Length: 260
Image (cartoon, rainbow, N blue to C red; front, side):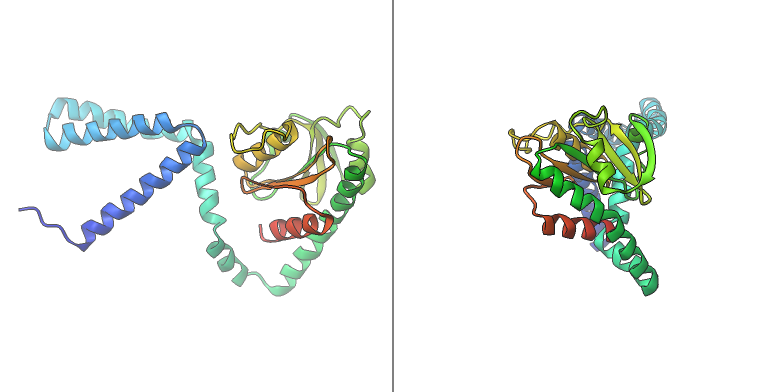
């Protein structure tokens, strides 16, 4: 007789939650068919080795599973990194981290954030008035070295006039993105991954889709100034915040960068 207790119920519930979370991750990264294929293979493997007890076929499938785990880690390393980041960036984890950070260091960090964002906010306001298109990316905890390599290194202080000159219409770097990292303008003219999310409004252009692309594939924050309307937007945590005022822009940047 099969015994079924509370521990078994918890075990099934945890497996269900894990499978649901993996399903959502694969669906967002357009790898749903791969997830379904893996699920079918696991079901066949369990049925052959545990239910039918076929030794030869079960041994072959066991070997394939052991090798397949390594292959999956290689194939989905970006998705696995995103899952681990989401766990570490959870609100409860941030609160725990803040308990071990002295108040004077938190105040110093907030001052540094203010010094970083104010030139960007002022530059975005001026470019918005002149309807100059811009795309500025703030690197956070996940490095963007692969994106930096696609552009031209600058390594300069964050300066309002420099940002406006980079995105001036006749500038050779105005079509790409500026990457800001460690309180410095690291590179300009960088190429970002483009999001193919169907939920993005059709009237938004390539800059907004690029901002969403980098926000979906990393924890970076991207500021966009529309060349058509002059509207300022932010992409962060895979979400777009559209038509922001100067105060809203400063508030969102401060909140997102200070709590990273």
